[in-house]
Amino acid sequence: MQFLDRRDAGRRLTGRLMAFRGPDVVIVGLAGGGVAVAAEIASRLRVLLDVMVVCDLRPGKSTRAYGAIAERGVRVLDQDLARAVASDTAELTRIERRERDTLRRRTERFRGLRPGCGLAGHTVVIVDDGLADPARARAACRAAYAHGAIRVVFASPVACALTVAALVGDADKVVCLHTCEHLDNIADHYQDFAPIDDDHIHDLLRLPAVHSAWASSPRR
Image 1 (cartoon, helix red, strand yellow):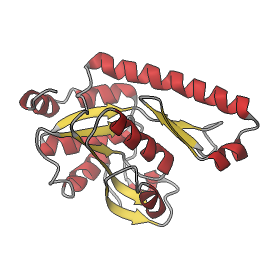
Image 2 (cartoon, rainbow, N blue to C red):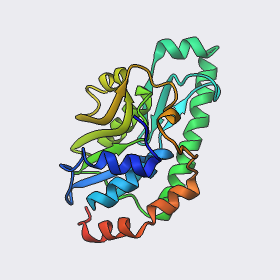
Image 3 (cartoon, rainbow, N blue to C red):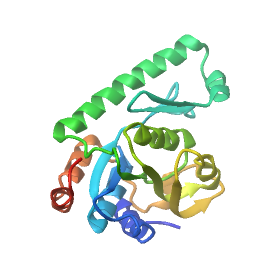
Image 4 (cartoon, one colour):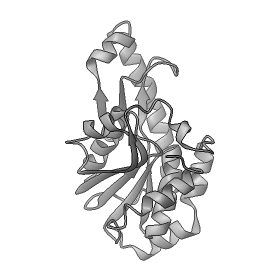
C-alpha cells in the first residue's frame, strides 16, 4: 500500500478511527511525521490534537536504535541489543544523557507554543507515520499512561507485523491500514515523504480546524 503523502495517510486512517470521537479523546502525533498524519485525523474527527516527543537511543544515525525515551522518565531498552551496539555502560549513559537533553529542549519548545491538552482521564490515540520500531511506540504508550490516560490506542498507516505484536501490553489497541513482514524504509510507502521539522510541526498545531476543536472541547 502506498500513500500520496502524510495528509493522505491521515485521511485514509481516519476511516478506521471513527469510533474515537468526542471530548474525551486526544490525538497525539509523535514529533516528526506523526504530527502531520495526526493533524489530519484530529481535524476530521474534530477532537483535540497534541504532540509528544520520543527520542531513539542509538550510538549513531546509521545504527539501529536499541531503545527509546519519552516524557515522565519513560525508558524502553532492548538490553541485548544495547550491549551489542555500545562499547560499555559509560557510552550508554552518554547517549541517554544527550537524548534526554534533546527531549527536554524539544518538549519545552512545543509547550512554549501552548500548554499540552492534558491527557489525564482521556482516551489517547498516538499516531506516527509508520510503525517500524517497537521501542519508540512502547515508550510513547507508556508516557501517555504516565500522564494519566485511561486508554491508549496506537495508530499508523503502515506497520511491521512483528512490531504490532510487540505492543501487546503497552497499547490497548493498535490500528493500522497495512502490515508487512518487514518495514525497513517507511518512505517506500509514500510518494511524498518530505522531512517534517519543528517549524512545520508548529504550523500544524496552529491549524484553524485544530483550534476549533480545542475551543469546543472541555478542559481538564
